[in-house]
Amino acid sequence: MENQQKNIQLNSRGQLRHFLSINGLDREILTEILDTADSFIKVGERSVKNVPLLRGRTVTNLFFEPSTRTRTTFELAAKRLSADVLNLDISTSATSKGESLLDTLRNLEAMGSDLFVVRHAASGAAHFIAEQVTPNVAVVNAGDGRHAHPTQAMLDMLTIRRHRGAFENLKVAIVGDILHSRVARSQITALNILGAAEVRVIAPGTLLPSNLEAFDVKIYNQMSEGLKDADVVIMLRLQLERMKGALIPSEREFYQTYGLTKETLSYAKPDAIVMHPGPINRGVEIASSVADGPQSLILNEVSYGIAVRMAILSMTASGQTQTEGLEE
Amino acid sequence: MDISVDKLIDDVSASLERYIAEKGIDNPSIVGIHTGGVWVAQRLHKNLNIANPLGSLNISFYRDDFTQIGLHPRVTPSELPFEVDGQHLLLVDDVIMSGRTIRAALNELFDYGRPASVTLITLVSLEGRELPVQPDLCGTEMKLDKGTQIKLEGPEPLRLICRESS
Image 1 (tube, one colour):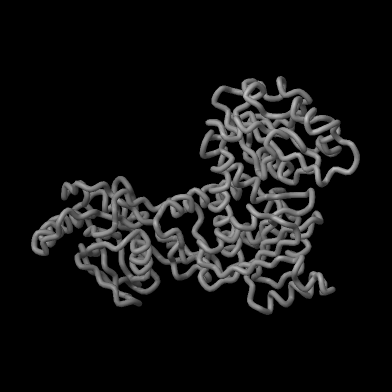
Image 2 (image 1 turned 60 degrees about the vertical axis):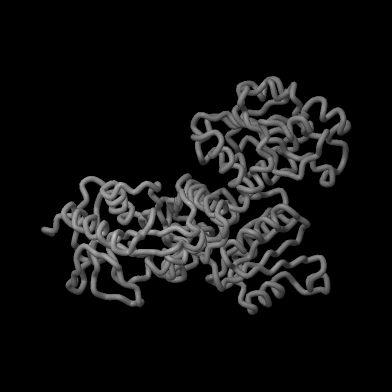
C-alpha cells in the first residue's frame, strides 16, 4: 500500500466506506463513482426508477444547516435505492433541547440507521461523526462549513464528463466567491485529481482564500483573461450571508465586473458549458439570459445529482460489507 | 475443455427456432445477461434473424448478495431498446447454476414492464440449483467436480473454461 497513513474514507481493501472529502481519493475511485452514476442515470430513465440495492437499510439525513436541493436529492437517491429515509431537521430536534451531537447519534444508531448524510456549518463535522459512529455505519458529507461539499463536486464532474468528455483536454474556470465556497474547494481538488488540463479561478482578491497556493490553479482577476478559451465556466453564488465586512463594493459593481452575461461568456469557447451549484442569484453572479440559455447545464446538474448520490450511497454501503468480494 | 461453443450455439439456435414455431411466439426480443449471456445472445440474435434490437441486462443492482459482497464495480448499464410491456422475451445466459442470477434478472425485467412471456435459454445448465428456476432450453447439462467452476470466455472466440474455484 502506497499510503501508510490510515484514510478513514477507505476500508482495508481500498474501497469507499465513508465519503467525506475528495482529498485522499485517487482518480480510480473518482472514476468509479462517475461510472456507477452513469449506470444510475440509465435507471432513472425507466418507468420504474427504483432498484432494490439498499432495501431494508435506513438512511438518515442529518441536516444542521438548511438545504433544499442537496437534502431532497439525497432523499430521492436513497428512496430510488429502496432505502428507508429519515429526515432530521436539527433546528426542531433534540439538540435544541440540549442533547449533545454524540447522544443524538447514538440514539439514531440504536434505531438502526445504516448511513448518515451530514450537513453542518462547522468544517470537519462529517469527519468527526465518521470517527464516532459504530463500525458498519457509513457517513457521507453533504457540506461542512467552508471545507468541502464532495457530492456536489462529483455531480459537477459528471456533468463535465457527460457534456465535454475527457478531462485531459479541458480548461475549467471557476468564477466568483471562492473564499466562502466549500464547493469550489472540492471542485478544484476533483479537477486536479481527474487530470483537467487547466483549472482557473476568477475573483476579486478579497474573495480569494489565502491558502490557494496549495491548490494547482491559475488565478485571474479579470473575466476577459480568465475565461479566454475556457471549455467549462462554473459560477459560484455570492454568499452574502457569510460576508462580515465589506468584501465587495456592492452587488451591482460585482455583477459588472464578475457577472456572467452574454458579453462576458463570449470570452470563453463558443461551445463552452455553463454550470452553477445553485441556488442562483439572477443579476448578481449570472444573467438570466445565460442561466436559461442554451449553454447552461444548471438544471441537468440537479438531475445528475440524484445519480451521483445513488452511486455514493451504494458504494459506501457496499464498502461497509465485511467479506471479500467474490468473482461471478 | 473439449466442448465446442460454436456447436452448442448452433444446436441451441436450431432448438430455439423449433421452440418459437411450436409455441407460436410472435415477434420475440432477445435479452442477454452480462457478460457471457450477451455474447451468446448476440449469436442467437444473428442466427435467428430477430427483427427487434438486442437487449442486455446487468443485474448488479438486483443481486441478493449485496450485504455479503457489496456492489460490483464498473456496472455496464442495462439496455432494453424496445417496449417490454406485452413483449415475448428470450432471456439468455451462458451458465445457470444456483438460479439466483435469473431471479435477479426477472425482477429487473419487470421493472421495465410486463412482458407477455419470458423464455429462458442457457448454454450450460449445471447441477446445484438453489431456486426453482429451470431453463426452457439449454445446450448441455453438466455436473462439476467439487471445487471447480466453469466460465464462458470471449467475445472472440467463445470458449468454455473450467478451472479451480478460488
